[in-house]
Length: 115
Image (tube, rainbow, N blue to C red; front, side):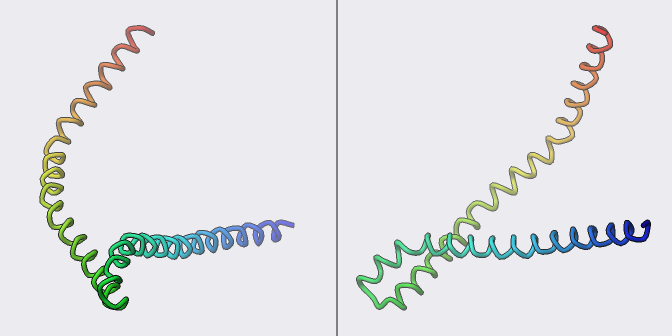
């Protein structure tokens, strides 16, 4: 009887591991499909306009290239302000921690006083 319980626990652990592993694989596939759909939806309006003037192959290539250039330009333009904001946040964190610690001490004092 005890042997069956041990094997059952082993099988439950193996099944949990397999489910977690399968979830990870499925999540990667779904995220890739979502990103591909997002890129296609972003490029489609430009591609439709370009198809009126050039061949469809060139329209697809030009729309994807322009989308890539726009995303890289946005990244290059937004990266320096984001870095500065993170530096500013890192400089403020010790003060925020001290303020939070002071607030907790005041709360504890209030609770001890009212209890």
